[in-house]
Structure formats: structure tokens, C-alpha cells
Image 1: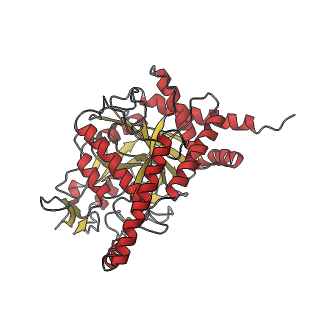
Image 2: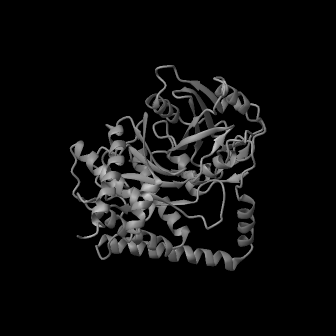
Image 3: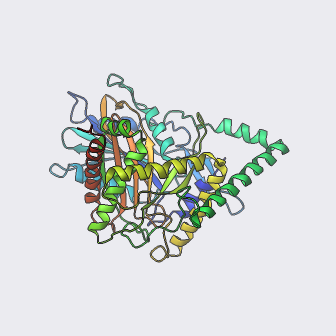
Length: 465
């Protein structure tokens, strides 16, 4: 049996038919040159032959009235309930139809009586392409872990034709190392006291930072939760129905901006999102006078630490005060992120986890009581960044040209945005409820905001005559 962390448990407690808590990834692949039309169907049938299922893909969640839920290994796994085949019709097989199908597949909850994952093989995409859509419960893995597992199962060269489905290979879950460390700590009273003291110190320091921020004695040490403007289309009671859109820019263009401005990928990406969101909100009749506040996951794993489940925290980050100058927006966001990074580095990871549990609990209660349309949200939206492989990956000789993240919606947010870097591209995956208007327009504004930032930086660093 394997116990859940509080954060993993929270994903189950927050889950509902209107707001399922799984994460996904959409891989758009090009069939190998000279391959038969039956290539994708053959691949699906080959997937079904890998019936030896490794942890954590063979685990079922078990709820008990007397204790915490636990993961238990299933006696058997019927792959026909986890691996599915779809075919798009000719004339209805473009990107729009693919995204519509992915949205429908992403909408329903996973069946808790089975291991909580699915793989959908999508045939018939235009231009000799096909897609793979992977879906897994957030309590099983965070986005970084899920991407690592997927990459472990794929090939680095087109010549490598071996099929290694991610459920059939032994993954590095890190559980043995974590369990040994916990056992050692449990035997040491001094270790327990030291851990409790470190947590108390971290929580106290974090509370102090929030207090100073609330009385305006600091600026962006960490943005306050539940102060974001709730009168926008971005927030409210999460409802069933999903829509999906993407944007993408070349990483060499991102690097050009980073080099000139000494900024990070997050600085650049959030600047584009900030500009796009303000423009989108103006289109919808909302002219914000204060900065947009995002929820941002932070990885709390130590360097080299691996494991299943989640080890992340969520903090609130203020983006830029409204401005029409993209370069000024970039500088403002850089200032905010540097302050937040300093705050995170100054407290124990356990303190960030505790803060995350408390703020998430408030959001959860608000959503469960159907009050999300009345009370302020934790933030205007959630933005996360999942680093991916820098080189192309392959499945049975088929190159994966694009890899798009599809996340879950937190309580009170009708939009979630995930960044994913892969093979020289930075992809923006936008998942939203059906109630959010004009999602495609927002994705177009992300690309346009990047071009505007690029030009603004060139102008700012243009040599004087």
C-alpha cells in the first residue's frame, strides 16, 4: 500500500463531474515515410499486447472510513479499458477537429474503480499525421513527472522502432528511497523535532511576508491570495464542458529576447500572456486597473529527487500593472518573479506545502458551496511551466512534431495555461470551460503579444544614431 500526501488527497477531494482533476498531453505525430495507411491501427493493436503493467499504472485508489486513502495494486489491468482507438473522418480531420476531440476526451472523470490513466490513439489526421492523447489523474503525478515518464517510453531516433508503452516499463518513482528516509527520521526524536522546528520557522516567515505585503510595507514579496478581481470572464464557478487552444513560438526567438534583456523564459512567457490577457479582457468589456494575479506552481523537489505523486506548491504572483509598453511589462514581471523566487528560497518547502494546502482548502470549500461566482478567486488564472526534451522524440519511427500540455482547472478558475518547451518550440496549452468566450482569440493574442515584445525589445536596445 502507498499513502497519499495531503496535496494528492486534495485532488480527490476537489474532484467533481464538473471539475475533474486529471492532466493530459496531446502529441501530434507524422507517420514514417513510406509507411502504410494501416500504420496507426497497427500501432494501437501492438500497444494492446503489452499486458504486463508496471507501477504506478497498475494501482487503484482505495478509500477507507478509518484512515487516509491508499494506492493498492490491482490484480489485473484490462488494457481495453485504458487504450482506445479513434479515427477522424476525411474532411473533418484538421487541427480544429483534433482539438475538439481532445476537449471531449479531457472532459469526463477517470473511473476510480480502475487505474487512473488512459491513452487515446487518434488516426486519420490530415497530412499523414496522427495523434496520441494521454490522460492521468493529478494525484498520480504532477506534470513534470508525467512528462518524464512519457519521455522514458519514447525513442530518441527514428531508427529505433522498438515500442515501449509507458505503462510497460519500470519508472523511477523514488519510493524506496523516500520510505527509507522516513523510517530513519521516525527512529530519531531529534530528527522529528528538527523537522517540526524548520516547518514552524518557515510558516512563521511566510506569514510575516504576507502580513507585510497586506499593509503595503513590501512589494511583491508574494502576492496576496483572494484579492484578484473576480469580475472577469476568467473566474467563476467551474462547470462541465471543455475547450482547448494552443499557441507556439520558436525557442530561438525567445532566446533572442532573453539574451538582450537578461531575462528568463518565464519572464518572457508571462509578459506575452499578460499582454494577451489584458487585450482579451478589453475585448470582453473589462479594463483592469490593477495587475493580473496568477497562481503559479513551484517545484519543491530537491535536485535529483524523483517520485510519484505531487511535490509542488502554489503561490500567487502579480504580473505587471497595466501598460501599453511590452518592454516595461517585461521589466515589471521580472521584478515580481525575482522577489517571489527569493521568498521561496528563504522558507522550507514544507511551509510552501502547508500554505498551498490552506489556500487550496479555502478555494475548495468555495467551489463545493457554489460560491465561486460571489467570492474573490485565489487568482485570475493558473500558469505553469513544464520543461520538455530539447530534441524530437519518436514512437515506432514516427516523429512527434508537437507536444501540447492539457491541464486541469483549479477552483474558481475557468482558464488554465501550461507552458511546454519541446524540440525548439515553446508551446502554450490553454484549457478552459465552454463558458469562457473566444478562447481561440486569446491564443492568437499570445502569438501577437510575443511579436510586439520582440519589436519593443529591439527598439529599446537599438543603437543610438
